[in-house]
Image 1 (tube, helix red, strand yellow):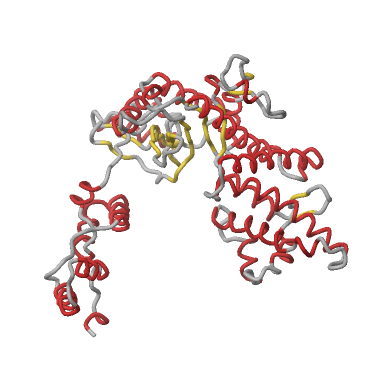
Image 2 (tube, rainbow, N blue to C red; image 1 turned 90 degrees about the vertical axis):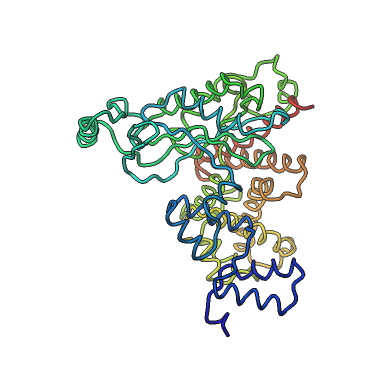
Length: 460
């Protein structure tokens, strides 16, 4: 009765610790009574406890973490620091400078990795995250941050006197400099590792053009190559982004500009793959696109009224799929509607679910579509077009979600996607998919092939 009327913090932890210590039922009840009265608090935390404490600390600061530690017995700040690694990133205050890259590469990448690790290929990743538009004072540097990096050269961020703050406020009011709307973040990811190392965090006012972004991408690669990271971590192989137009243009100009040299160790392998684009950037770096963004954009295309046209000329869109996906036993009309008309078009799991549903439908209709008397001609044509779409989606999706596939099977899928996409695009152009989406998917596949060849060269 007492448990039903009171909230015992971390009751599962109380019971688990008691049982691990071999406590009897009576002793477990006594522990629960002590916890109920607040005289016993279990020790020991799991990964979820530390994740919650970290989230509380980041969003609410020390005071909120202390309050919830006292009330809910989540880890304290002292415990959190003893069991977690805090990344201290040097923020961009003013224009983007080399020393910001250099310090972050040293402190976040080099100082945190073991010397015994083998060399890995490295991929840079760039994206924006939400940022509260406000100026902040960095006490460590006595500087004002939160100003957009592109225009912050017109102000002195150092707070020397009261007039320094007035000058910055005046520049903001006149529009010569802006508060950052988002934060441009560049991270480093080593192949075969899950860790991501941020090396740049720069507030942006979203007015950069392709030349500005080209300078950032080139500066990132140059600072990595100028550091000890190349010899102690590994060479830069690719630069990944989403479908942003400015980064798209900058990435193409930097990383798709020179043909692979015949004396390259990759040439003998890749030249035997007809149709593969062998243009790269300096150091044989290639452009890449985030597969999650690719999945979202493919599903956005399928859901659009114009839909996607394949070789039998049928238009596959939400209206058509709403009719046929409801044939699946697991999908009622409401479930199909959520797949085809989601509240959040950026929902990646929902996009993957839609792709899997199309594949499942196609597999379920194979025996029926082979029977020429089982359906009318229009339905048969629709099912045939969905079967084609299913093969296309399966080819690009499975290498990223099926962990049981071998490396050979993954690349067989990607190769099949490239050939299918080329065939459909050659026949239907924009009716199949936009030029940019076609470019991005084929570039992503190309990068995977290049990275495999580089890995074989790095570690035969």
